[in-house]
Amino acid sequence: MDAGVNFEQLHSGHPDNRRRARSLACSKVCLLREVPLLLWGGGIVLLCMCVSVAAQAQGSKTSVASIEALVRSHEYRQALDATKSALHESPRDFRLWTLEGIVLSIQGDKQSALTAFEKALSFSPKYSPALKGKVEILYEAQDKRAIPALEAILSADPKDETAHEMFAMLEEKQGNCQAANEHFLLSENMTQTHPQSLEAYGYCLMQTKQPEKAVQVFEQLSALLPEKTYPKYDLAVALADAKQNDAALRVLEPLLAADQSDPDILSLASEAYESTGNTPKAVALLRQAIVLSPATPSYYVTFARLCLDHDSFQVGIDMLNAGLTHVSNDPSLYISRGMLYAQLAQYDNAEADFNKADQLDSDQSLGSYFSDLAEISRNNPDKALSDVRSQLRAHPDSPSLHYLQAKLLGNRNGATGEAITSVLQALKLKPDMVEARDLLASIYIETEKYDLAMEQCRLALKYAPSDQGAMYHLIIALRHSGPEGQREIPVLVKQLSDLKQSARQLETEQKTFKLVEEKSP
Image (cartoon, rainbow, N blue to C red):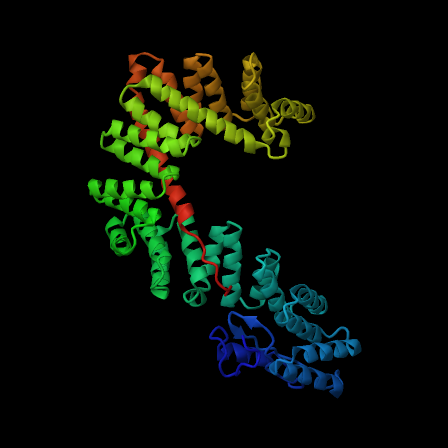
């Protein structure tokens, strides 16, 4: 912003009553000056420069006034020289350090500006202009060190909406959506004109399961950016999540008419049409999305769900066969095809797909579970096993280490017994360790101990009813049980399908809301 802006055109976040309150804070023997010092929510902060006539020489006051004039005239180099000269005479003057920070920040030397603001705060820790200058630099860098400074600002002025908005955005970046929502609520007058903040607010409301409130936020965003597509798409997602599918379609249909080349829009519209009972339209749109983006696993999973719901099992299998030619290493496709095979009573094929999914998921989790064991990612399991055993000697009560040892042993011939012993030890230390029960069930299935596998699956589902691994392990184990157990399979397939759909919806929400990079508020 132009440093020479007219002071009568100040930002609405600083009303007259707040200006008067600042003025009253200065004693009658102090000089009140309005100085354009730093950007704050798009406006100019009023700096109450209380200069004690008794304490300050006239030369010092002249120095401050001359620096102000230079800043207003955009003569930043001269302003910086004058500030340094004044600081030589008054090295503890926090106002001069603040002025230096402002000039340096305007010139783009953010690190030196930050140092100057921190120097000012070392002499006056609650000095608002220095706090705000520090916050602006740290906030621009998305540095969480801005949070303590924002807390100090809000401690002095709990109604500072700019500080609340910045706080909210930083909390959202850290994944703290509950805290972000509280600050967004306290900065509504600011956020309603800032697209990036509205997008983040809507995202956090969705993450905290408040789709109805998110609808209101995305409606504001859509009105603010009527020419943009993404606010309408986000609004449709929120409406669909709030079970307002007819309203979601009213938002989506103009987008479909204008541009049918966005597979995400097509997929979302497909789900909305299915929810309103228009299955043919849902299938047509989802097929189109798959054609446009054949390597997106979630589209095939959604298609499989449609086929399960409408008893079109072979159609779903054919589509997944096509999908696996494009995406051969995604376990969700094998699980989906396995469920379809199970509905056709092709249990051998279903079991093969579930085992393949289990193998792929196991490989992925093994590669990421202990990131500090670089040997795993370098395909050196012997060295990894040696390191795990070494760590177990130092930490014998770590369930995670016992579990990881069992996973590594499970890939070695002749080590099944030792793997079982290790995973049982993990469960002894942590009975609710669901991933360990899944691993044990998998080992029992491989060794044809199906009753034991079923026991572990049911225990895992007791601790985690949405554990998909336990669900498809149980389907495999029941496949080898008597007629009564096999009658349970269709019910489990339906439950697993519901779990996949819930996971798909969550994935859609997480991928949908993408912040549009704009200038920070």
